[in-house]
Length: 378
Image (cartoon, rainbow, N blue to C red; front, side, top):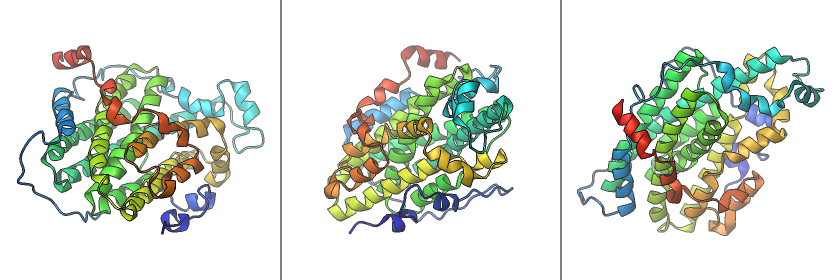
């Protein structure tokens, strides 16, 4: 029997503001977060390389595509933070007149350009901070995959991803510290998801939670930000990170596609429920409770407006452009009478099922020979 929303996420209504707000980020000086990892480490004595050709191809591609975050990005670029905020401004309107018309009767009705600009800066810093924290989550989870996956080809590839994720944490941290001079703590919803992924003892749940859900959402978000930003350093940073992330998501799809063919309906239902819970936690984190608190507003007054904001709704839906087709490729949408399909319909993202899955498109994100030559030359 499928688990109810109450049991999965602690609320019946996915848009229950009070329930969402009950999960809040605690700011403090603690620099270490401890999570119990319950998974066994698995050795394999089958060292035959290439038994799984698609994974071996990914491994060879990863070896060829390494870049150096310290030397291959133009860190000397002067960054004007106001170049970064157009995406955040859009949720309230592009022009002052459009913003004024939209905020009548809202908590930000008396805001002027100064407050809207500050909100946009805070929102941008918050988003890049969560990307940084998520990349560290991926670093931990991929190291766990090296330990727990039973196939040597998957261990080889996962080891390259550990290096990738360390590089991603490095470049996002450096950008925040040297170009924006501020960052936010780990969002509580994202933290709970990372805890769930790490604590689960089943190796495929690490794949599903991190490679398919978290990395899939990140790939879509990076692509959207890359398209929107005019800041050259961030644009190049995102381009390089996306080239890695597409391989990472493809790694998850290729590995789980084989494994999920052997699972029972009951086992698949557990994976469907996990994917839905992860989707909601990632959606809820983008409500940015911490930003509104820093801006002196009560998030309980703001969040109902954000959930109904058409621009924000479109942005949140676009974040699932990679997740939905990948779940379809894994057979998760339609197993158990379409349980996950119905949940994605509820979230308004099911139309993305017809997009190309990442196992078929990851090479389109790869760095070109000119980019790799430039990277090698530096």
